[in-house]
Image (cartoon, rainbow, N blue to C red; front, side, top):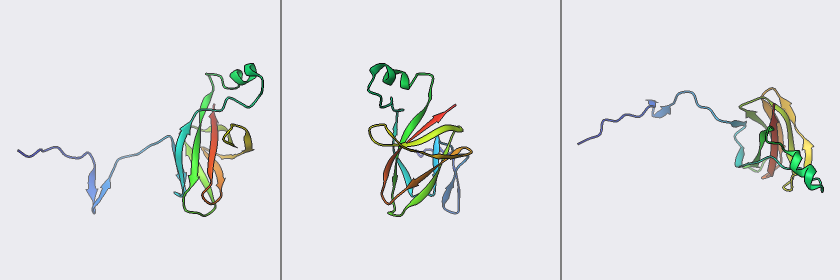
Length: 124
């Protein structure tokens, strides 16, 4: 007995035609890929109390580990699901390398050839 279930996607000229798609982040051009979603850094102060207070539970944000995949420098537009309040590139210990520019709902990220970068984004 054959199953009569159909896909929810229609085909158009051999390709799938899907409805609206969404995501938390999208990047243009496609040479920039997300490797990992990370939590906010707790700061780099030596005082334990200051480090614990650096990220409060009420703060909203995340960090992304990005990689440039084609071996050419790129300025990527990382579009977010919410308008970012602050964005920075941090090193792997959580210290700020530099602040990033915000353009509407996008963060502008400059990556060199095959660079792996942690980008921290905070929202309102």
